[in-house]
Length: 446
Image (cartoon, rainbow, N blue to C red; front, side, top):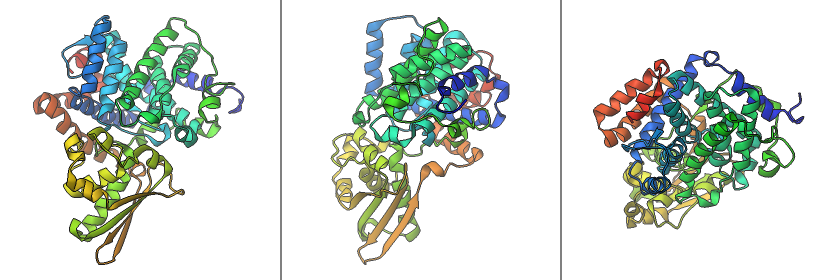
């Protein structure tokens, strides 16, 4: 069947239904556990964020059955509410992973719904990880077909594609047949939305929560025989027709043979991923040349249109807005040498010293750059110019180093939330997660 003959949605549904846990290589599971550890750390670190409190208040007002745990809080809500709240919490710090082919942040759309479902229905750890890997692969395939035109049109891939990734993962965990998997994708696809216009507000993390919640809803409805279009992606007036993109065989070729989780890029700075390449390149230049800030005349940062759209803010009033400002992130990194969550407070964004340095930084479009590519040029007061290039999405460390770096980040974040001893215990449990027979006690322990 050709790529344009109406078969993409069905092929993805067949992949979801047919893929067993034993068919996935062990290394993919190890990558998934690293991603899960990272996700828990950033979610725990955000447990007291005002956004989380507002969503908890909303859930209290709505009521419902106590089915799944809200991370960091000694309460349970309905599975759908838990997916929403934990999903939004895990993206509020903008410290979560990215995947270029996904056009966004995959784990915050998958782990919240899968953990809520696994706790509620007492699924085993191996099936939980398997469902994550399948959902991630489906999302990456859809994203590769949608292409950059989808993102540049103003759609937030974490939300639009995340809806269907979450539905795919939940359909796998529920062991739905091929027909029901196709309907789950259709139910999720017709709900897909999410505009980049809301970046820098509470709605960006809300996108992650809604994607997770909608995916869970879609799979549960499909399980009950709820129907939808079976060609939601490629059909007339379907996802690609309205949101940009086109089915292609190249994107499908890796299904079941390669696993997108290996290309997952974790963050080591608590800001939009589009700010990472510029600040990495700037830091490398300054450190390699031994430059002091008082010796710098100007800094020029060349980025793609994507990066400029996502993180081109210059007029800042809040720490949240600072996460989407290349000029602030570069200035903050050079001035303070610290790029974690504590760097994005209202007070630090308004600091006159960082504002003064931001005036020396000019962010300019390079139309040839793609995704998060960036080149930085630092001019000294003596007239010397030093340049450097970075593309953090293409600089993913090998698994052992990734595990080490994520574990350090996790212990810092989760240790502050639950204490170092408890955080270490959770880490040890995740290392053996595929042998866990029931996810409920693990989730309740969070």
